[in-house]
Image (cartoon, rainbow, N blue to C red; front, side, top):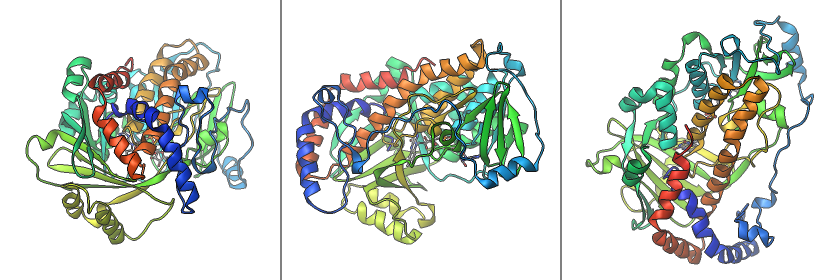
Length: 483
Ligand SMILES: Cc1cc2nc3c(=O)[nH]c(=O)nc-3n(C[C@H](O)[C@H](O)[C@H](O)COP(=O)(O)OP(=O)(O)OC[C@H]3O[C@@H](n4cnc5c(N)ncnc54)[C@H](O)[C@@H]3O)c2cc1C
């Protein structure tokens, strides 16, 4: 799910010639009654011009609109919380007032990678922030993350270059393979590193999280604080928590992930969009030779995928993805059996690496995204990371984009004349790029999960033929993020 940003362009390269076949495939599948997913949002400009667009499971593309004023969707319980306690903090900087970064307080709801990176970026700019995380303590999140050059560059600038050196494994080779193991595409990682001065690395998610936490001032993080609602006016924003506490700040950043409360209060609550597939992930110790230690691969079959990512300290992270109904979860040993069955016909070391993983260490996650928004901010409230632009993990860019958000938001708050103009500046620099990645990632997932043998053959042939310059161009687009 995280092979390389280079794959983004392939969505166009592959989709254009096979779109007609794809439509035929969708028609064939529609005739069969089994639940299936269809092409969605194939917004290839040339095709859209001719009115060709597809929709997944009957859902239409739904661009959210920002309501001019917050709608009243506070529950009775939330109302009670508000009455229970007096304000804890009072800060009042008017939206239009000249910005004074050293006197500003930014409240961040959510302490995932996006929230912590935002707090760190603000800290580096001399802006005070408070992070409120709903969980009591951060759970060890047992999986790996690929950080492409764009995120590595931003983390370097946030002062984490040395830490990354110790926790991250460099990825020097990257391949896309067929289910039988044939290399369909070699991603020019070394050339990209030389040309764009940006390297990709793999990290254990929990270790990246810990590194961000350690870089932050302790008093800025508040655990066991679940945000339940907020209200803003000319003086700033007030956030209420499930504990009954209320905190006031100048800016509110919703970094509360896919099911973001802040987002739903800003633009209205909607269900995330199931992508049609589910992913299993695991981390295990696995011996490899030196070259394999720097090589990641992703293997595409018919409606299924497998990926292998080397981590530091002799560990590897793997993922398996399959077209599936939403919400089908089973007990852990059965889940492991399912993955073993799924990869039984895949080339090695898929079977061996899954076999080597404890059943209890295998995570299963249904994959979702949301249709892009046309705006993320309203007044003194904005969004970062999955709260703003949840994307399928096919391009391995979700966390990378959250880190970019963090950097640009802090820079905007430091340099713009008012809060309103800072949030506007942040959005202008980020929204188009993130939304493009949401769409490309979704399309790539659709292509990766084609099942019809004709389509799979056609796809694999086109992947083999993809010119190197196309890949390099795409890597450049992702890596060159003006950070
Ligand atoms: C299978 C898979 C593989 C992936 N691989 C990659 C990859 O290789 N590279 C990459 O860049 N990205 C990858 N991603 C995407 C990446 O994981 C996410 O984009 C990223 O974690 C988003 O971070 P976030 O901080 O925005 O949200 P989250 O990580 O969801 O964090 C949100 C935080 O907010 C807290 N919270 C929620 N509600 C509240 C509330 N009301 N009050 C207080 N706290 C709250 C939550 O407890 C959580 O800690 C992958 C995703 C998946 C599913």
